[in-house]
Length: 114
Image (cartoon, rainbow, N blue to C red; front, top):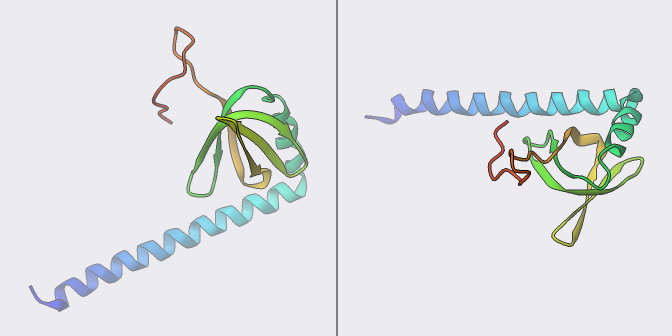
């Protein structure tokens, strides 16, 4: 096969990549704007319910999950502790907070399917 057959396929993948990247940026921008308009306090109040519980926190930064025990909730951040190390997560980027799932015996599940 020659170069002329691979070029359109390569260009198609590049265009799809650019469109998906821009779409994620638009979603992130809309979420931040919405939180600035009043949803920020709602998330803060909801996050306070999970203090001293082991949780899984999802952000919209490529759907990254953070897990650990929520120790403190401030105006703009969550303080999470895992294995004796602390981590702060910007509350503007949090999509979902939930308690770590447990099986019927009360032990933590090894695989979380969401």
